[in-house]
Image 1 (spheres, rainbow, N blue to C red):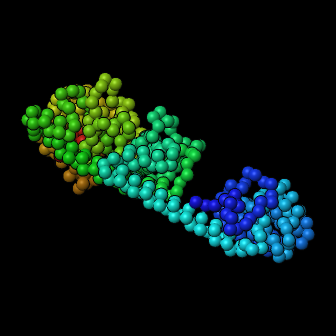
Image 2: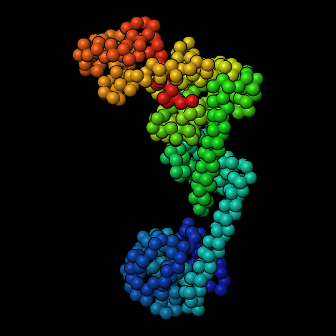
Length: 480
């Protein structure tokens, strides 16, 4: 380890003699040895040096006092004064000024070359550096072994905290992935050091280490290991969600017998004998990031899957309601820069109940709010849940003539129909919304009737067109 001035005094071969009376600084480690005969060596010092001099240019008491003040301001740990050349003994004025500032002074006999002191300090520094390097390599091995033997992040961070002898927290946005002290408050910049963990993704992870601690370089290595493990976790999450998505799609499409559906759901962790709720997150702008995104802490036990381009979470209904979970998911995704719409399904048992909850959640998400409650007994959801009803064909049959006419003539019939149905059949409201004359709106409605065979003014035909638009809206975002 690094050597102190007190330790140097204990080396018999050097023959050093203590002349100063300072007591508190004799055990400070010597970072380096600086030999100087300058009157003002301050600019050449970094602090922590033992200053060796023969006082060749320190002839008067004022010069000697000034020299002491300068090396003290530079942060020197002490002065070694060589006698037998310019001075037969350490000058009293130098000793008095050093005592005033609490700076240790030792007398170096003529027989002891300065290089011997420098070599001893350098050897101690090298040994200390080698010992630290050995500890660092051993630490690397411990952390890597903790991760590679299946302990995961928890085991790695546990060992890191032991090495640093302090508390460790790993956060992902506001969620805590790991906390070494149960009940420990959320970390802040006050009292904690923060280390970002780069993953190349949007999942903003930070390693927090509580002061005080001494870092020998192990934290940088831990950051790299954590980054690798987080990326591995993302890949595992993507694989698991893809597998779960295949099962859920089969259940949603009704292609499995109830017994087989129950068995396959159990295989991905869904117990269909109890009530489950589906949360569905969709994001047109960030679908790729959404599929691999992490979840907030309350949803860590949920079964998640990618169905189409949407992220689906199946949550056990414990009676507390799913709205809080949905809001937490929305906030978590927003922190990741993912703008998503969350739909909530109802709580039902059995595979068919899961299908129903899924379509309720999908229908709810179409409302466009950040978090959307389900509309119970939704006609759209009911029909979407039935694979036996050829909804897409029915919708296309009704709306394709309008799409084709709009494409050929730029007539805006689809927009007019959507506005008319959205405004409960009010021609005046459509005219105001689309900035059209009322007669233009009536003319377009007549064209819609002629092209589709459905009159929007008639209740039965209006329901048919409204349902076709609803199916088109949902189907465009969730192709089967």
